[in-house]
Length: 250
Picture 1 (cartoon, one colour):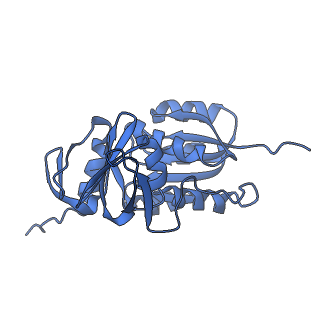
Picture 2 (cartoon, rainbow, N blue to C red; picture 1 turned 135 degrees about the vertical axis):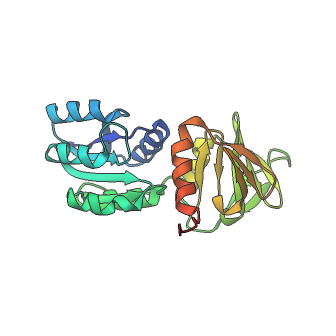
Picture 3 (cartoon, one colour; picture 1 turned 120 degrees about the vertical axis):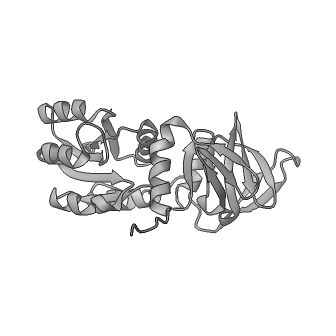
């Protein structure tokens, strides 16, 4: 029996953490295969235009030098499907003009990404299960501090998840529980929900529980303090802009 050819994919995003997140999403779908990733849109344009066609290009919009919209116009003929990924909904119309096949608004969950891929490649993508996905609203974790007792944690109660080497500490308003798991493993579990974000390598947070922001420092309602990482500043500033109420000029 002939082996089914994988869906070839190129990722272009000037933010390394965004590429890392997409790599994790792609890794959860066996039918997808990353051919190349680029943080430099100029280099991406030269390589893609002069290279072999691919099945899918995932393309950020707000990039230096060449915008994703301009790049999309140049590489559209070299891909079967073109998907824009951006934190700005204002680019949706421009994406429509380039005849993009879909538009993912950051931050998007693994479930949203999978839905898009299933829609674009319905005959190639199997009924992929999201690893560690829960249909319920809670999980049980083994508590390191309490002799591995199973502790019930509601996803909606999670304020932040903090990396502690080979462990993660899950913070809620009422308690903190440490369990043996990496932050990336926990991220797979939380990616099915839309309300978690990452602004620092060692933390995943629920912005609903932010008490205040001062410069690049975030204070959570349970007292947890986070400093925004360098790679995440642009993503963080986009988040602030989307939530900030601005006074009208007279």
